[in-house]
Image (tube, rainbow, N blue to C red; front, top):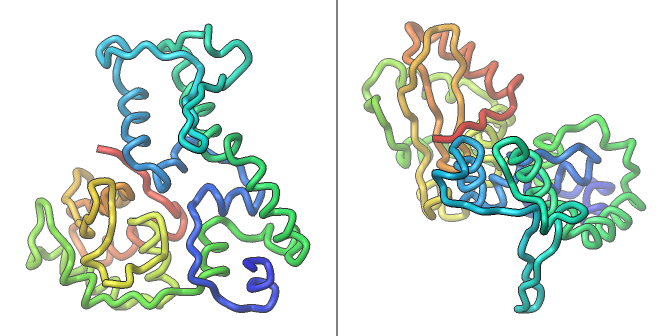
Length: 262
């Protein structure tokens, strides 16, 4: 169905995860891609990465629990994984293998079946020019972002609605095209999908979570960053509207994604 829609130029309201778009394009998967699938699991991985294993009280091995039809079984992430402890030296390897299992290995049959049908109608070379964000727009179309609704459902931390940087921010968004709005939405939320109920229904790691702008440290040379788990934009206190417009545009167009965690 998806392949037929792309081949015929029809749009679908079928937003997939970032990792699945990468599978369609044959791009490598990174552990950060799990963020859009399971934000809570991503948070635990970030804790594992940044904190000492002993302080977390964890005794892990290179295994993962998998539930199939209500039955939980343990699979090894690498040969003899059940007998290999996770240490400070190999925990990045563990994180990469654990997320790869969730996003790839554990659903390999389903991915291959989808790709077999998709590529019958859309040859791989025809879409190889796109990245995962552009593929989402190709399949789903450019959303209509209601800036009035977004503005009404935005929270501020360190700024207020009357702060110069916030006025410059909204002036910048109002000057942009629909395509740029879609790119910005993907930058701060991880997807171009607009909730049916409007931006009051944005979902983040804590459930319903409105878009927020937080003042961050930095200068006119710093770029804004995004925490897609929280629908949050970290915006430095720029000295001019020109500086804000330039850095925000660069961040969403060139950087594409501003993953951060905190």
